[in-house]
Amino acid sequence: MRKYKPYIILISIILILIVSISVLSAIWPKSEEQFFELGLLDSSKKTEKYFSSNSSTINLDTPTLWYIYLSNHMGTDQKVILMIKLLNSTDILPDDKLHTPSPLKTSYEIPISLSVNQTTDIPFLWSVSKVQNQGGKEYIKGLIINGDTVDVNVTSTDSHFRVLFELWVQNKSGDEYFYGWNTGKESLSASVYIWFVINSIPT
Image (tube, rainbow, N blue to C red; front, side, top):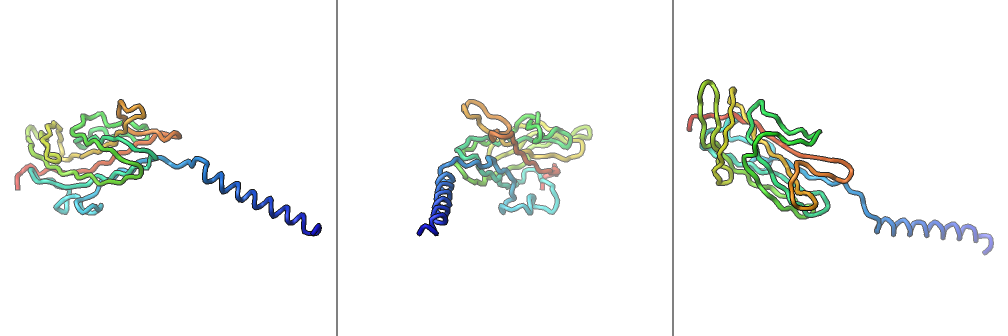
């Protein structure tokens, strides 16, 4: 028995270490990356065909259906607002490196409450309802978004516009929303936009 005693002790120490590591792994707080996912899907909830035609042309008073894909991987319930902005081809976009939003006026807001690990597809049904052409410029004056009439005033010299979606997140105190969020290690932000051309002649 004395001959095998060192081996028995060694095996016992190894088993104790294995059990200790397993217990610590189970109770030790896990450091998981905290983030949101934001995306834009077409009417079939894919990323294939955002417009009814083969081009990115929007006809006046013709509804277009998209879905805003949003997923919460922050580890806690979250309250967010999707800020939707209408831009022309030269307006300033958000800077997701500096985490600053576009300075342009918000046209429409969609508040959302997300539980832990919840993923949702938010319908975004919209159309251009009012356009004015004057002096070689095109003015979009009105939108219909999810049944709501929205007054806007965005000018373009090339008929190109953008619909921008920014993700604003409620802070921990619950009294304000900010563009982006803090993971505890770094600041992150998310936005997505899509181009379109307006055909102001009713079809």
